[in-house]
Length: 78
Image (cartoon, rainbow, N blue to C red; front, side, top):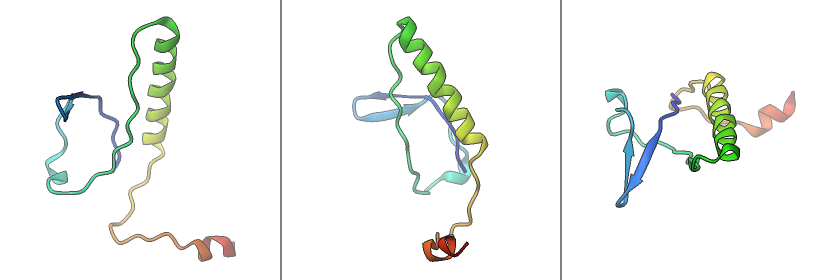
């Protein structure tokens, strides 16, 4: 599963703008942090490009089984 969620870092805690699904309870997650910029025109354009990229990445993300392992040798055989 992949999802793009906004959050605020405050006093050592990451506060999400929305709740995660209860199915994720107790699971280890990998986070990719992209710092939001202040609101100058150039920074707003960068934020929009970042948002579009993250939406694109989420659209093309695939769900893999928990026991999936990438086999480099098999990939190079093609």
